[in-house]
Amino acid sequence: MSDLVIPGNVPYFISVALLLIGLYAMVARRNLIKKIMGLNILSTSVFLFLIAVADKRGGAPPITVPGVDLYVNPLPHTLVLTGIVVALALTSFALVLVIKIYQEHGTLDADRLMKL
Image (cartoon, helix red, strand yellow):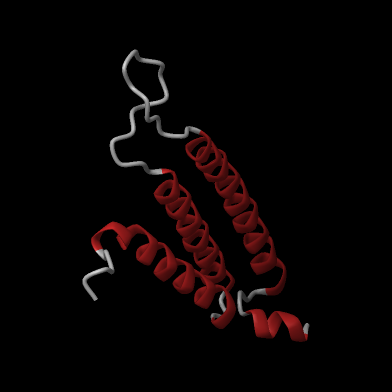
C-alpha cells in the first residue's frame, strides 16, 4: 500500500469523479437544463484531466532560458483554452434551443418531449 501515491493522483481522482457525475446527470436526469449542466461538468472533467496530464514537477514555462532543460508542454493548455471556448458556445446554443423548446411545447421533460 505504501507504493500507491495518492496525493500525486488527486487531480485524476477528481477528474474521474466529475466525469461520472456529469455522465450521470446527462443520462439519468429528465430535465434538459440538468442535462446541459451535466455536459458542462463532464467537459470540465476533461479539461482538468488534460491539465493534470500536462503537469511536470520542476518544469519551467515554455520560454527558452539558458540552463533549463525541463519545460512544460504548452499544447494541452492551448487545447483546454480552445475547449473552453467551444464548450461555452455549445452551452449557449443548447440553452437557446431549450428556450425555444420550452416556448413551443411548454415543458423541459425529455420523456414528455419524446411522446410528442
